[in-house]
Amino acid sequence: MSSIGTSKGILEVAKFALYVTVPIALMYTFANNTKNLQKVMGNRSYVVYPPEGPRPPSPEELREMAREMAQKNNLR
Image 1: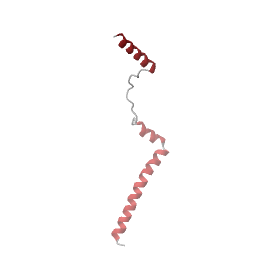
Image 2: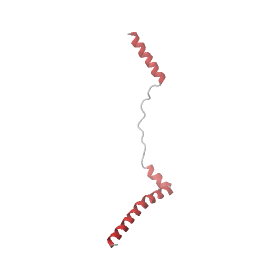
Image 3: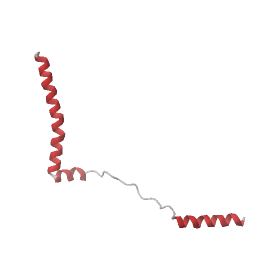
Image 4: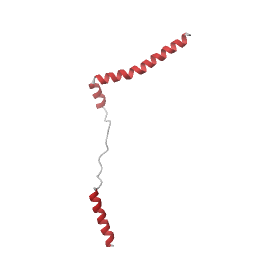
């Protein structure tokens, strides 16, 4: 083997090891220290619900409204 191929192989192995260990190390850090996790999660509001709008009429109210409209149409 040439020395260029070996050094590229070692570089690739080192990059792969770095890509694998960094997320695992971060997960381990946050999983073992809940204060860190609470600090990170507390800084953001992940779910923001829109304000509640008016509620639709109940089925009984819809029936009553339909009866009133039918009565108005029958009187004409």
